[in-house]
Image (cartoon, rainbow, N blue to C red; front, side):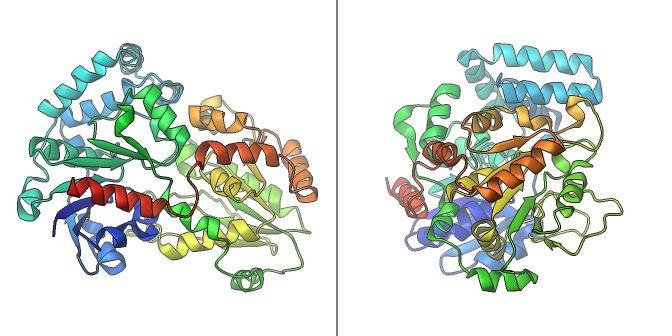
Length: 445
């Protein structure tokens, strides 16, 4: 039986890949070694250990502790002259005021448009980045191939470097719909899996990755979404003490990580609490904090706080459990309206044709970079241009859009259909099967 490493360093991988059925399918014909951060090892053993599946914990984020590792990590972003990369560089300059850092980043973005520059940097990255963090793990388990579930993650990149040095075959999958515009691929895999035709198109345009090495599989965790809710409306509402006779609005907060000082979420929640005739369910981010100051939860508002925490004060590194994702599926299906920031909740909702509003209004005037500046990221702008969601930039528009959607849920259905055609080209319930088959065939080739 051949051995394959499967990485899981990002909080969404346990949802996107592992609990979506890919892991169990791989274990039917191969010995699977799940490589995770060492402090999460017990969580993964409790949730994913099984026949032909082993969990190995390793120290995380070792490379960036060295100046060379940090330099190449930054170059992975700077050399990508996308609108998103430039926007984040300007945001950092706004906060840090480091002029030479800003000039270096912008200059890197300009020369990074030349693909021969990226080729040279990849060569130097492979040669001079700190490595050998996974040497003992590789020697112990002798993998026949490695499946990288997030090839832009620093930990995945470190293992990619060691895999290249050891001549181990590499297959990878881009984690999310926004990855293509964020940074370069520091190590090019032997085969690349993507979730949709739109992402494949972006990979060809932005990475110049060989077309014959790309396979569109769909996103495995959406297999469950298209099957419908797992609970009846009555049973789901009973979990939160909701009234089935009243409409339900679900708000997925922006989260503290997207705003310098987050007073936006509380402001939106206060506006929603004024809608006394409706029920408001707040689905907090599973891996991000939400700043609330002396907020008094009204009687028509209910909280859902998903995610497995490893530290009481740490939100950025939680794991999404199967029950957390199942609850989100039911929340979307049984809500009359979804509200969020620039997040993938918009895609999740559009998949099942649920109306969506994104928020971008504040309790007081502020500089652009003190608000949700990521609304201007390339993938969000592309999403807004579909016309499938409404974008509220004022309280007045927000209230107006809420009533319009509640009165006519089919409003903007054509735009949501366009979203599905772009990012859900392979959403047919068989994505996890396709991913597992591609990885299995790759091992046996």
